[in-house]
Image (cartoon, rainbow, N blue to C red; front, side):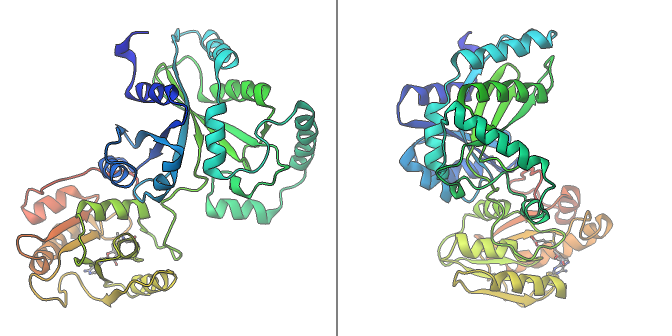
Length: 410
Ligand SMILES: C[S@@+](CC[C@H](N)C(=O)[O-])C[C@H]1O[C@@H](n2cnc3c(N)ncnc32)[C@H](O)[C@@H]1O
């Protein structure tokens, strides 16, 4: 294995392996907004942190006592602990041999104990990480009998509705034997399927640790991230994505809270700033602004009465005591003085689920002219989210300071 093949993640993980109490953390972030997550990570966890940025992910090493800071981050969706990174010499045309290579490596020297102890501390799992074989056999029989019963609608429905991953490990009891599933995410050309990798690794882990397989109500999801010849074995920490916060009443175009936060960060809010979202839909941007930047003054509105009503319900459902003004208005004619607003962050109607592409050419011009009028001369910042980049460029005739391409925002 030459140095040239070692990925940044591989090198980062090797550093964490050398130190007893250092762990590699990975987080997912909306593609296109990774730099916001890198900046927030340094700001909240440690300014000197070395952060590895990949498409849709960031990685960094922390001590266990820094984990509470990672949990506070608002730019990221899911958190996982990287427990092993290794490279393979796959044949690329002989699937059986390649799977055997994986199996032997896992059997021989995959040691997840350091990661598992940290996972337990980070998730609050209270059950048994290392059950005895007899305990496993009894629990496995019980679980199989349970699985043969028709599912209780309430439980299945509840999990689907909230789209949680498995179950909350902190709600386990001391008697619970760890339930797990293995998921394989694969990039590159291989002579085997992702499902085969998951089965091989899942089987080896069961032989090693006597855990119970449960594909839906698991405590631990082991994610095997195979990129070309490099396998990163990760333990999921968050059983629910961090973008699911703030909003209770959803609309057709509700924006993820993590995206709202990252858009707001792009505008660099300062204490005392006036922030507006003139097309607020159900209020996801103003609510995130009020929570994440409590020293600002937040104003929002929409021209659709249902959207205004939804925003009001969502604001009223918050426990914070931050005043957010909500007004029914049209962005084409805002009831605001010239040069009044420090920051405009808004999610434009874009013609997919709201607005129409043809309208955009005309409307965007009118809207941007009005936003330019209310924005503070010289220092005002405008962060506009749209799928219709062409219309916005044509309408404004401007070359935007920065254009970020973001995927999967709603
Ligand atoms: C993409 S949605 C915003 C979604 C919002 N960010 C959320 O998470 O719920 C665009 C919104 O712009 C509003 N809108 C369209 N034209 C408008 C106008 N002239 N003035 C104010 N709001 C307008 C629509 O009613 C819609 O709620």
